[in-house]
Image 1: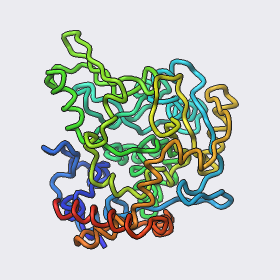
Image 2 (image 1 turned 60 degrees about the vertical axis):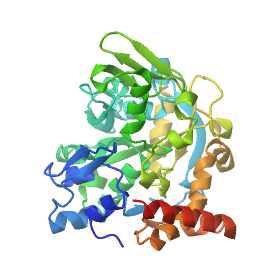
Image 3 (image 1 turned 90 degrees about the horizontal axis):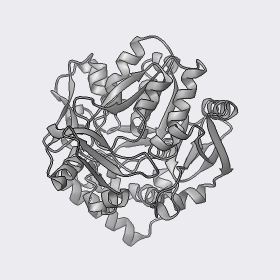
Length: 398
């Protein structure tokens, strides 16, 4: 069992979510490391009470599904009320977003209808546009201005204390691990469930380190100080990665050029062991839905949505009725398997990978309700041992 944040960081199981900064009132800051990851600094700067609260919620230590009564359930995709193809009805929202604009549209609708007073999410840092920062958006226009996925290190939960201190209902749009931490924190802090009333996530392929982005600059012969815009996706689906300089130069890479070589993704170690990339603590999870798992060209933008809670169901229905969201045909769990085959493979491999971590003396993430052991039994003995040995090798080289 993990007992300290220092241990989580030393084992490279920290994802840099920002909760450490929030729960210490900013005394511990999220800082960028030379390896291109956000980590709490100083890592030993917590009181015993802070450390206990953090370890009980840290995505590097725990992950738990949030399951309501009356849901359907799938071994891979978890509890859900419905699954469907959807996209933002407003053409600009749909076009500017990373995929179909569902999360942006839902955040904007929640604000317009007074369901929430603001949205906690992330956007480009105006001073360093390749990097990201947390944002509190009070208007639909601000939500839209910060649309589209931000690949690379993000710490949305560094803004959680500021959000809770407002004492007003809010939505969060973040990664599954971030919202999982919010759910875990709710058991210790009653303000979380009272105020964080809408929880929206993307189905996540992993968080790349900043070194992935700097490699793009190196390829174009640029320094980060020259960058005026770094758009990872959007303006089409999947959209190109676009870098614009202060001198007016423009450089692009297609989605496949950016991501086709998995060895170059430079994802965080914790992502290799993520038990919930599918957003099982969220109200709505939104995914890319390319058959076979990768795009073959550009399209208008279509999301697959997994509606997990009554809150999510009501929000989606309200947005559709208001003409802000288009909800089309139903999607089955097996179709999601085809759209996101890497998620299935990882989920099946986790029991073996966790055993490999334990073999190396590293505490695996403690999971609840995520069916890791059940899915691990799908692996034959040879594949199980391959995954176990690979995880041990990775941990041995930390």
